[in-house]
Length: 153
Image (cartoon, rainbow, N blue to C red; front, side, top):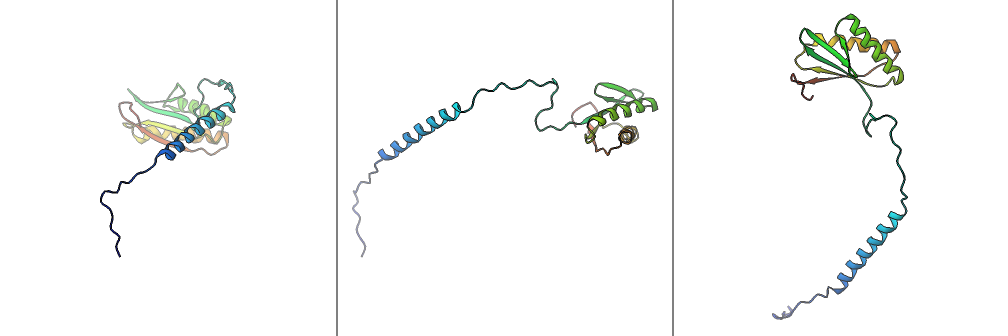
């Protein structure tokens, strides 16, 4: 047997307990937030010794730039310029070797101008391998190509 529903039966919901619960939760979270803030004392953070500190998560690396100039290519490392001839490459190799002595596992990035041919980048790779041989370590070389106008990789 089906039960007949009354057409005009109102449905009432008492929301008072729900509102009380919401206010109790708000009060609870406010009190917990205040107590957890009191447990953390103010700690003065140390200032970095080196102004050019490496950001968290960033790995240290050696970056050799191979840029095109009138009359050939020029290599730079840490603001120092090296000619692409034998004496400049020897100076570059000893500068890289000096950095590798302090941290032998440091990777070396070669950032080359996209307009350069490989034969102008190859001496930089040879200088890096010569530096690794001087130190007696293996080195990871990563090559990045830059836009011809000096843009981003």
